[in-house]
Image (tube, rainbow, N blue to C red; front, side, top):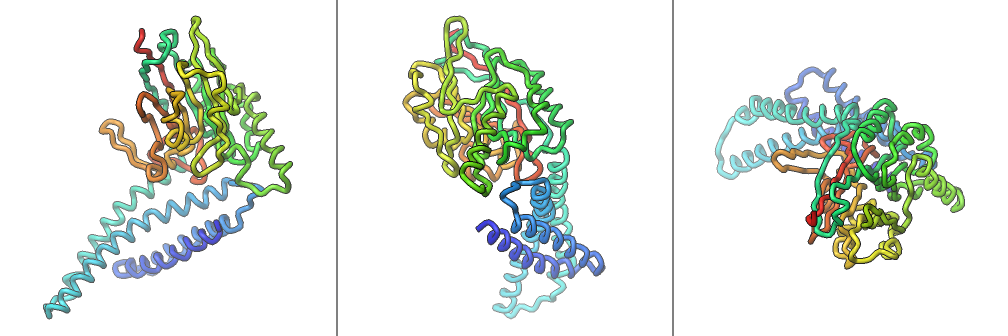
Length: 412
């Protein structure tokens, strides 16, 4: 199914390239540049096709497969923009031709061609340059452009002893994708520079295999121990679902070794269970569920995870996929005050201008809650944009995130 989708994409790309070639040919007279342009894109398509069609699920995602996707996006997105410009021009030309034919109005072909085509080409190239250089930045520097986002959240139900309690939230490390030790060490230093009372990680420590973390233990084990603990839950990638296994036993062994990663980096893994955090004789509840998503595994059992937790308790829920909050959690009668999620990465591609409140990403067409904070009847979710990256080896406009949340109580 996946291979056939890739082949279909490549066939469509070839036909579009032919269309673009004949449009370029009208005003680019140098055949060397025309042919070179076609050859380069052909090589990009061949590279993508080879890596996707012959993708080895026993090895999983590699730097080579990610970069084949990145190069396709780098050369494909600008072409898509030029395609739109040329199509609009041809549609207008078509209407003009039809008008002239039906009204017997005689107009010189030159009215439509040289100057207008040149303007369309220059305009298209100017617009296409934006995604081209943005994607280059995303694959080189953007994927490690870590941002610390600080947010104060006010709750009526928060015990006054926890007023000012700080949570550091990270998610989606995807250790199998990381390729720059110096940048990751910088990110860990950035985490350790923050003031926080508890650290919460909401899943996807790997892409698929336990050994992806082997070369990163000494880095992530440097994350400082928070006064009230470092806790984690699993994400959809932590179950080994994206590989072919020789046996169910091999898959289970991989899963057990993935779970064993967390104590090695100083985190306690919560598997549909809870812990009480006490301070000055008052307490709040930390609830951690396994992955539950509308499109992925549904192992999260919120009822099991909340055994012993009362409705009146202030609750922090760790659940990897925000669709869990949207479908179930936000209307649950036990009232989960704050939910922490990740998973979406904001699709690692988007535009966010906080100063004017503008945000856009393809992720919003898949997930109603795709990045940042959302509220529903006194309940709040934070969808962290993620620490690492996956599939596309970069980030554009949606930067890797470290969130520091300060809880505030109205009873103080």
